[in-house]
Length: 290
Image 1 (cartoon, helix red, strand yellow):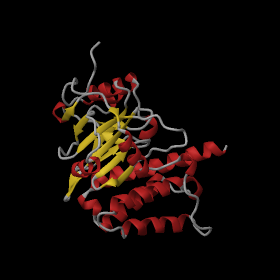
Image 2 (cartoon, helix red, strand yellow):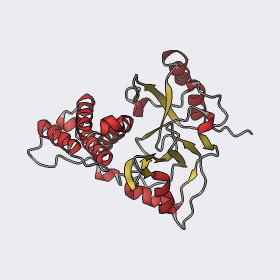
Image 3 (spheres, rainbow, N blue to C red):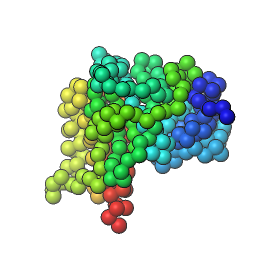
């Protein structure tokens, strides 16, 4: 039996890439490149990402023929990813090499990111206790290292030349998984944060979120944005905060601290990841308390 890898698809047609990902069990959804740069994703992508061939053929066959392909990471896709950025004087590949010094780091499915500077290392989803929440983090594992796990996303490579190692994702070594779990959201039992103060209402939450992003220092802005959006997502029901409201806070705050003009795509990615991670944690906590 021939093993299907991401090196087997024809270059560039989104539908071919999406179907290959789906054949590996990876849930996919359309990504739209915006005029002037940046991108956006299909609405409610964490819920609608799929491996269903009929839906994929409809998306890329007629509705969104020019869309790129994004992959939803997490247990349903059976993968998590280390996103190693190389930009602004920070090299995630060096950070990982330093972290792994003297320890096993097996070869796994690896691609260049679309900037063709960074790397995405794909790992098989681990067997975890139900109490463990393996979510996303930005820079906590090391400078330039982002974790894409439950509720996360990565862009699929749209060219065969971007695939460095086409083997199936392997399980991460115990030491790496342990470090990654420490750097991510830890437990669904923690649930979303309650309102931090009795006086906290929608207006104060919005103002606090805006100030946290606006005054975030260089080198910490992405982590702050992720944390703020996670909080707003966690409080979205209790405080009546919508995704559009949170997005406005993101754009305005990032515009003031300067990150929107230098890393717009990363701001968009972090917003999506943090917001939906928070919304999902709220949903999990609600179900457990029913």
